Length: 339
Ligand SMILES: [Zn+2]
Image (cartoon, rainbow, N blue to C red; front, side):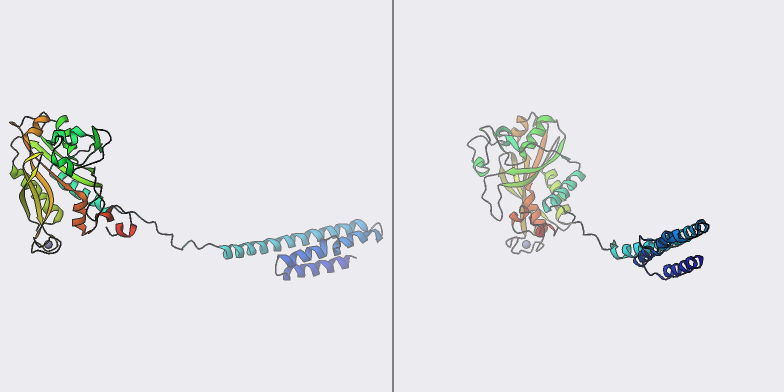
């Protein structure tokens, strides 16, 4: 009996030692320790032994079982670790794959041209003022020398909220608000959306953007107007840019002028863009009308000023060579990505 136990232990040790995986070890465990296992059977058969031998043989079987079980567990732990590592290797996620690229937005061409324009005027000591888009008719027209029945009201037909309240047709009411609220010296620009009853086409939109400017102080002359706007045009369109002023008419300035800049496409030689003239009109300007100053509580015998205004959409189109104003509002990413 004892020889048999030793032989079984040796046999089991060899089997455990040569097992290749956890499945093989489990088969060995069942073979020796299972309900019908060899060692289990051995314990059952002890009843056949002489009473005196039973404790000794029982102890031997138990000790053998403990050694074999320890051996099994060690091997099992080794296999389980190896199998886990293999599984981890197989299931590993390749974290070196490049992440999906985040699409960064860009500034809209209108924003770009506004920021450039704003910075040029900030550099000359101007401040930025803003005002409401829903405006009093009085500030939009009346105080700018445009009484009811004035023909330029037709040209600036807009959307009325009531008889007295409308969507502003220009940013000029911000000039009125500034003069009412602040005593000279005044140096300000006012950017913003404006509205007119225009059919949408390549050069018109019922909503567009303006930037206007106003300077009021003692001794301001037409020479200051020309100097400031010439500096602006060279800063925006390049140092070779030439400017020219033509007499014009606006109700709120006297004298009034249109400012042209030399065509940046042909350099002034004449081309399709400038219709052969070498110049492109970019804004209206003039000396603030004395009655406008007076209406805002500024004494025109002491102070004088100049004002100017331009369409930002038109400036953006000129600066970036955009042919159709509608492109600015369609939010087509293929278009907007180019700036
Ligand atoms: Zn040209």
